[in-house]
Amino acid sequence: MPKDPFRIRDHVAEFDDIVAEIVRRSAETRARVPMVADVAYGPDSTETLDLFFPEGKRDRLPVHMFIHGGYWRMFSKRDYSHVAETVTNAGAIAVIVDYALMPAVRMARIVDQVRRARQWVHDHIANHDGDPGQLTVSGHSAGAHLATMLFDDDSRPSGIKGALLLGGIYDLKPLQASFLAAEIAITDEEVQRFSPIDHRFDHP
View 1 (spheres, one colour):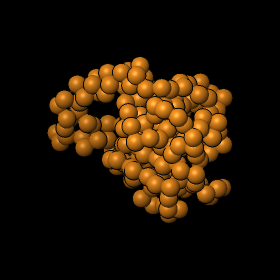
View 2 (cartoon, rainbow, N blue to C red):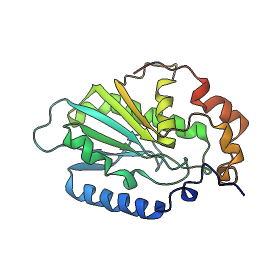
View 3 (cartoon, helix red, strand yellow):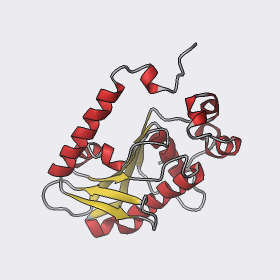
């Protein structure tokens, strides 16, 4: 039986060890880097973000927003606090975003959440000494996919100056024949609406 290309454990023997290491590093980051935890960007308990700050005086600092992966169904912002080390060492504010997980919610809800998180940054980051005009974004796997949705919102410009999208899932159709079919059951309508490969985007 062929291996499922989307089941990471089939291809990365050290997967669980790698996850344990990033969780450990993230706990260390939260203990060491100045931060404000669990800032609400919406009314639901899943709609929070963590802010991490560089040492020293803060005045209109650049801002970087990170969206975690996990096939839309696992992990949280706490598992990826370690990303803030690189961002704050570069002199920027790190915004690590949380969102609800499938299958408890559908893709449309998660896309709406990350868009509202981006809007929160635009509207409120100046209160934390950040400059919304210097906003960049990154994400990996499902997080990279979700980041593309920040450039696919006709209601307003993205306001994002640059993006780094790592290992993104840009065509959702193959997921319907993967192990994820039993876990998140991507629908035909979600494939059509949320496959970035079929979309046009405003550039950062």
